[in-house]
Amino acid sequence: MTETETGTEVLLRDLCDMWRVRLLEEKIRDLRLNGDVVGSVHLCIGQEAGPVGACSALEPADALFATYRGHGWALARGVPAVGILAELLGRATGVNGGRGGSAYFSAPEYGFHGENSIVGGGAPLAVGAALAGRFDGTGRVALCVFGDGAMNQGSVHESMNFAAAFDLPVVFVCENNEYSELTPIRDMVRADVLADRARAYGILGERIDGNDPAVVRDRVGDAVQSAREGGGPVLLELMTARLVGHYIGDAEQYRQPGELERLAENEPIARLERTLRSAGTPEPEIEAARDDAAREIETATQEASAAPLADAEAVRRHVHA
Ligand SMILES: Cc1ncc(C[n+]2csc(CCOP(=O)(O)OP(=O)(O)O)c2C)c(N)n1
Image (tube, rainbow, N blue to C red; front, top):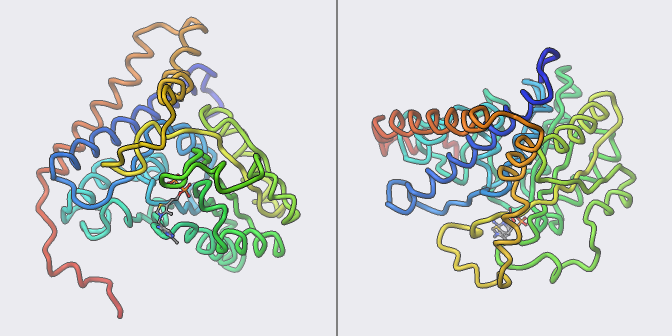
């Protein structure tokens, strides 16, 4: 957000950025269904406000660690759509030369230090990046994203405790979409508010509306600032919902009747469009947010699809075993 932007301009940019994520995800779904993308793919449709709000509160030197549901986080962090799509399509021009695929790609040059398909595996890495930042003088803050299911992983507990003990600048972001794979979180955890666990580590924890990018930016922004100033880690629990299956092909038999319709009423894109309309924003400006995003994703898809496939020999590159 620049100082000269009006509130409406910021919200329109959020809308466009959420559309960029939504349309990228829809494109990836189509490419997976027609066989151009292979392997397991996890989409974040419905959860766009988290990455868009949180990444707009980060500085270029900050380090972001995501999960297998990470395409949207990468895009919001600034990784070009064409590099992501080429990666998923197994092209030589992908951000990792087509070797990372949907679940493992990274782009450290954009401060995107990878997806971690090991549930909770990003947390110790984020702690390490924050610790390294203390020694190398960059003042970097590490932001680590994981799901509600990952809150029960030992690695996440240990990372939060370690970061708390050493006042490390880590912002732990739990995207609570209320399901771990096919299991509702309420079947696995007695406590209602996961953010309450922060108290046990002696750090601040807060549950926030994860479907409003402005709220996410505001609360992540405060947490980042506090961490940067030596205030130690913070845990934010973003309440959100995925509107698609855990992975492509998930039959979603665990859903209650009418659940998706109810969740769709609170989904971030439709909600922000309603807010903008009721504030009197002209319809062409709202439509332009989507059209700009659609053009970008379409052009990126064409460019990525035209790129040469990765050379099978390249699979050995960067392997040091
Ligand atoms: C250490 C580990 N255990 C199990 C799995 C299998 N697994 C993949 S996704 C997932 C559920 C994670 O749920 P959550 O953390 O809530 O994230 P979400 O998928 O909802 O974004 C599990 C158990 C894994 N990838 N890593």
